[in-house]
Image 1 (tube, rainbow, N blue to C red):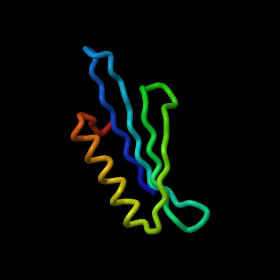
Image 2: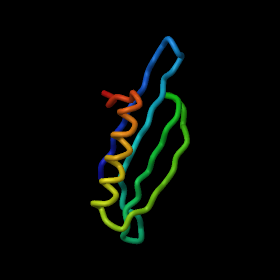
Image 3: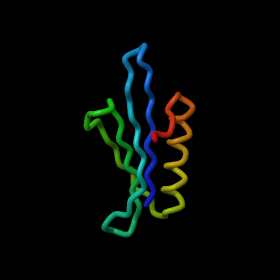
Length: 77
């Protein structure tokens, strides 16, 4: 459905991180927000959260992206 990829890169601190937020449908008619984060080039960690409507899942994903942008992450690309 929708995917947002963010990067936070600071060579002085040896920091190269990514944060990906994606909204996906599941097999049971609900929607899942998948968050994946870690060092660029690695698999990273992930967490899933389930929502009953696409609107609530998209709102949660947008809130996560805003929070990360406040912490210094920028849209990749």
